[in-house]
Amino acid sequence: YKRITTKSLIEMKANGEKISMLTAYDYTMAKIVDSSGVDVILVGDSASNVMAGHETTLPITLDQMIYHASSVVRAIERSLVVVDLPFGSYQSDPKEALRSAIRIMKESGGHAVKLEGGKEIKDSIKKILNAGIPVMGHLGLTPQSIYKFGTYTVRAKEEQEADKLIEDALLLEKLGCFAIVVEKIPAHLAEKVAQSISIPVIGIGAGGKVDGQVLVIHDMLGMNNEFSPRFLRRYMNLYDDMTAAIGQYVDDIKSMDFPNEKEQY
Ligand code: KIV
Ligand code: NA
Image (tube, rainbow, N blue to C red; front, side):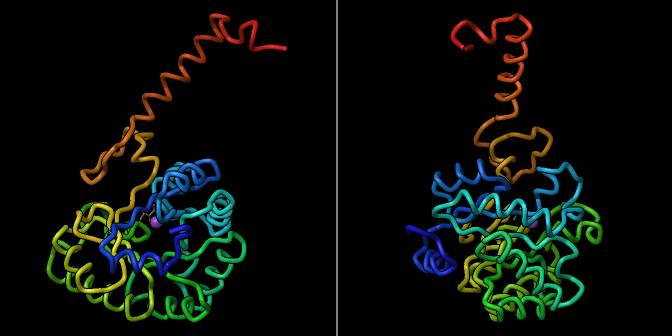
């Protein structure tokens, strides 16, 4: 694919090709992610944690999401850019949800939006889709509801919640969503969801029997040492590499090694 569209992702699922997705929140990182061949870039509201240092995703605003998303969009050539609708920008009523989605599309140039939830936000999803804006769903552990859940532990282990999740997935497909993220649910449940619908199911902490995987880029690059859930595979230990490099810089300044003769005018 020269350029990934929502249609390409549905084709990939039909052909059994797994979808790769990663977050990015700024121009420089997005350029690296796009050139590395990642299919979908998510401008996640995890920016609230990773970029701004908040404990939850709740404080990030629509304006801040638009700032991150527009920075990402300027960098990309191939990836599909999906932007999270932040907490408070879509829950109160469908009209507000549509207004927020329109602002993201117009002001950032992103290609699609993502909303957390199923049946509860059905009318908002419909309204956004009716305006021609592609919607990605998000079920399972939905961090914007963390104060309702109380913890970040695995969701839908009990039958009742698992049944609701499957119903929600079927509903999201029927409404016309182009894909669904499932976060931190049992692998066998995620597999069942992926088999039950024809739109791609992209997992995070949901096992390998789904149609694609997503991680937060700072986590997979090992930039934060504190966050180590079982589902996270670290591909680098950038925290250690960066502190070593920056420590060396400090030492070189103190010892007057930097700058040297060749590094000045
Ligand atoms: O905000 C985010 O990074 C996400 C992913 C974890 C799916 O929603
Ligand atoms: Na998110």
